[in-house]
Length: 180
Figure 1 (cartoon, rainbow, N blue to C red):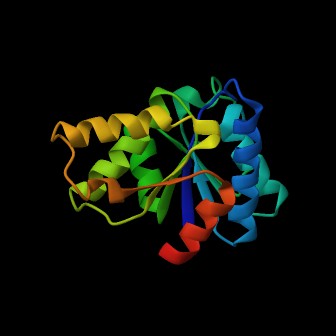
Figure 2: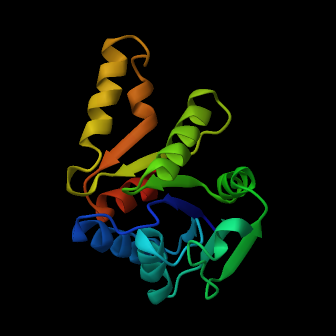
């Protein structure tokens, strides 16, 4: 099975559009018969993306460090749950299990996961697609920062093609169908 890893916040964020997009993305992943790999939480956008996939009958794999299981309300109703010892193990297993990465709105942990997967692509450690679902313009500052890095020659021409920005879950799925 082709697995799509989704990085997202463990809180719902300020805009209800974030939750709607997460649920829709999870549903579309399941309807496309892709598996969902995510951080294993029941709260926030993590919970919403997994809800969408589970309600549509999808295969959902969660990966969560034991120290966060209670804190982030780890789900026990998943197709598969991996409880690991550390954040490093969590990320490594999520990356190993996945064929593509989609980033929803989130905070520091989401940014960390996103930048690591894109960096690994840049370094040639994998060639898996990295997509950003830019819900309600949440990632407009990131786009500006990447352009700023390009202008200041810290980001090479062509590197922007390592990241695919999308404004809807349907656009993300269309891209995944073409790329995988």
